[in-house]
Length: 138
Image (cartoon, rainbow, N blue to C red):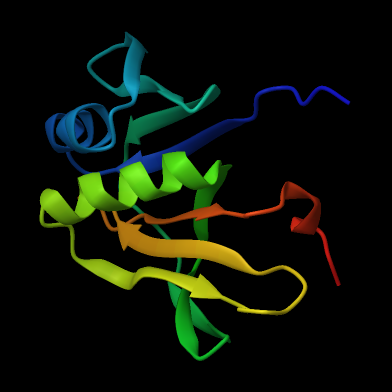
């Protein structure tokens, strides 16, 4: 089965800060843009930062001893991609909500994960599995 790219639009309060964070820090190539939005290539998927006021409450949900930010978005990377990004974000001084870690160690669904926020407060989770077959393991 070949997956189709997803599309996600999300609010940011500063396009220049979004451009620096997603383009320079995260390494996402920039696509089309205007004075109100910017497309980014998010590991083959299209995310769009829209200049808008964020709305709605932000919460957390306890998962494996961590307070997971809700809502959040991200991508499942290969383990080498995840390790490279974790090093890149650490070197950039990113303040992690949940530092790079292995969650569910020795259990079905064992995964590398990290949570952080963009300059507008949007939460991202980047994860990887040693075995991609564990993505939906119960």
